[in-house]
Every structure is written in structure tokens, then in C-alpha cells.
Image 1 (cartoon, rainbow, N blue to C red):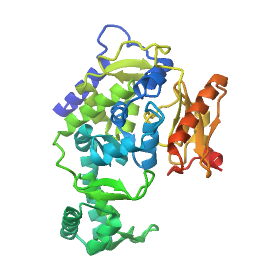
Image 2: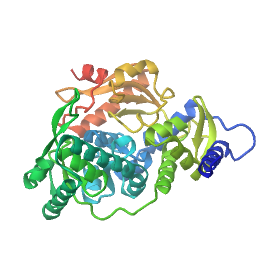
Image 3: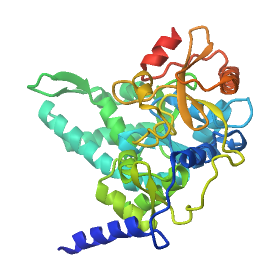
Image 4: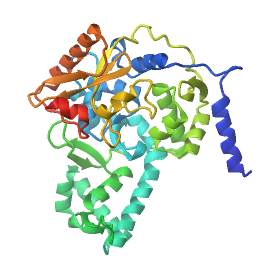
Length: 416
């Protein structure tokens, strides 16, 4: 057996057997997992946060593909009724305590600035290498442009941003004509078509951390972002150290979880997941789905009826990090509800939660009304709590209309 194979086997064994005590691993049932979720994800009434930074730290990363989802996810977890808009915009565009960047599973996330180096090293850098190689391959097969042309185009874009401070993609295209160039995608295939290089070039520069998304055009639901230069270089970190830091933070927020959950959420190879589990001293526990993992200091039982753990109601947005946090979701989602709450690509829509379970969905009608639809009989008290959350949400959304980027059957039907 080679040395690398031996190291892999040893790290896997440490992660799986570090129970901290002889005998069988401690069992953590679904009820306890739901209690952990309510408190750690700032959803239980007594656990709600005082700032957007507290929410982001508690969740590790918020899905940023749909910009409105970030604001809605924070709003569901903040104490009070004023809403999150000013707080999120301050954190993203003034203090820069949060950053929007490509991360796990090639998805855009909003996460604490302090975590950005770990995500960049562990996840975004490898994806950026693949993205640049793919762009060069497509340019070579569908145009006369090469690596030298791409490097010069990128230099011009960065120089333009240095002068402007910030600019939209359209503004950069007007100032840098090369950015408006096109190439033939999928030449000789059924997918053949002419595409602009602009989005691909900006995507690569963004993934490499050489440009960042700034304030959008329009309001907080807009996805038309301006681009700007980063305030400074991100501190370097080794890929292995970055993976260990990210796994440690994720287990603190979302543990216990299975190896499959971790592989799915990170998008890493299973060998990288196992090495990161070993690096943080992950402890094996028994879940309904099989073996799971927690941090070594996170074995104390959590009482499902403890203060702040429930019962609680929440209206979470499409792509919410809690709803999308695990690959195996039966412990908080009845499989019968999946067809109504997910689109065909597996993106979850707006959901209604009661005491750690998804019990329905919600939508906003054209007149602004927030409507909920319960798929489970949760009783009158739960119904009143859900109505109160809908009223709180409507209060801070005001005149803004929110349509999820990925529409789901229940959301479409309820929105009218």
C-alpha cells in the first residue's frame, strides 16, 4: 500500500472511531437534531440574532444565487420587526464584513469575510482553475482568441475598474470592446450557438478574487450587480487548512451530519472530506441515516424541550441555507412534500416551518399579500404562530415584490 493510501486509510479510521469513550457511538435522534437546528440556526424565538453578522456566523454561508434570498433568510432570524435590508447592505457594501463569492458546489454564497480565505483555498481556487481552462478550450474551438488575448482583455477590464471604482458588465463592455467579442459554443454539436465572452471573463476574474460583486442596480432584489476591485488581497491559506476550517465551522452550525451530507454540501472529493474530518477530530455518532459526525466537544445531549428550542414558526425563503443544508432531509421534511416544494433541479422554494419541520410553503401575491399553505395539520397554536410570522414578514417587505428565481409548484400556485 502506498504512503498516500496509508495516510488516507488512517485519517478515515480516526474520523470514524474517535468516539472519545469505549462502546457504541452516542445516538442523536431526529428530535434532538431539530432542537439543535432551531437554536443554532437562530430560528427559535429566544435564539434570534441581533445583527446580520451573527446570522451569517451561525449559518456559515447564505445562498446568494438569488439576491433576495439573502435578505429574506436574515430577516427570518433577526429579532424585532424592522427588517434586515439596511443591516445587510451595510455589511455587504460599507463594512465589507460579509462577502459575496463563488463557493461550495460552484454556487454563489454570502459569507463572513473572515471565512473567505478558507472558502477560496478549499473550494473556489480549484473551481477557478477548471473555469479558466474551460473558457480557453471554448475560445480555442470556437474563435481565434487565445490565452494572450484573454490576458490582455482581463488587464483592460481591471484597469478600467481601477479608474471607475465600480461598473456594470454593460459599462465594462462599452469601455473595453474586446469584452463584447463572441465565440461559437459547442461547434458542430446540437448545442452550437454564438455566445459573448463578457460573462465568462467576469466570472473567471470573480472566482479568482480579482474582482468582486458590489452594490446592485436597483433595489435589494436586483441581480444586476456592479463589479469592483477587492479592498485588499485575501490572506493565503493552504487547501487542506481551508477544508479543515470550513468543515469545523459547518459541523458547529449543522452537525451532526453524514459523510454524504458533507460531500454534497462542499462539493469536494470524498477523500478531502475524510481528511478534513480527521483534521478536526470529528467524532462518530449514530443517526437514523447511519454514521454521522460531530465535533469532539459537541457530544452533550440537547433537550428538545429546552429553553429557546421550541416550539417556533418560521417562513424561510427559496434556497434558504437551513432547508438546503443537508443532502438527507427526511428528519425535517416529509418526502411527500418534495414535489410541491422543489423545482425539477432540486432547488427548494419558500417554506413554512414549525418546531424544526417543514410543514408547508408560502408565496407573495401581486398585491403584496403573504399567503401560506400548510401541508400538515399542525394545530391552531401553530397556525397562529405561522400567521404572526407572515405578518412580520409583510411588515418589513412593504411595497417590494419578491419572486423567487427558481419557481416551485406550490409557490406558483399560491402566488396566483
